[in-house]
Length: 265
Image 1 (cartoon, one colour):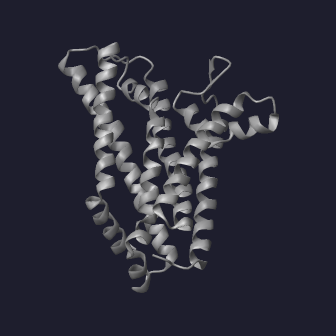
Image 2: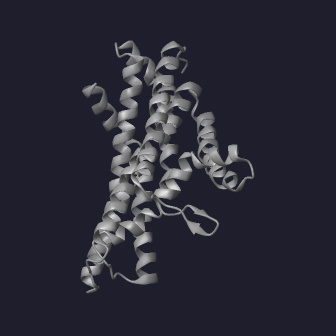
């Protein structure tokens, strides 16, 4: 598995999609820094406040990273490398798990790149401009920021599990990309349109979509003009269990179905 992961890491370094998305996140961090700086300045009430502001833009990640997961899942079928890897003695389950682990590493890198670079640039700008750096509401902002970053990793992993499952089943990149957009935008629409439904069943669906949870921990979920966030430990636990359950189901389904399917490249 270690050799396979090294091979995937080498592939990602050469992959134009990976490099292109990395460049997008770099530019996005700079644009966000410039926008916030020109709008409200670089004064911060505590060292975690810039990151708390940045996590409110978490939704941006979910319209880009799943697309990469789709391309990454299907590249073995598109370029014919899957047959060579399987014929060399690697099992199908280890191939998929290795792919998924590699995608998680990519997600961690992009989380660090987007939020980490934004934070470094922001604090550097605050120091250079002599802006005030306080210590107010430190504990509250720290809890919200750390939990939001952790949930972003978990929910991006859930989206990656869903999209990679679809990619391994469909096997064709073009079709899998279409399904990826349907999954992401469909989840977004279910979250937004069903929450105001008169049906209790449809409201329940809306409340348990991935996108609803993402909007909650990123501070963008509004009902009746009220901002709805996380209020107690039970909500944090529930928010963690939803993606964990989805990841578990998707991995099991993919391993079983991929193990039984024919490989056409």
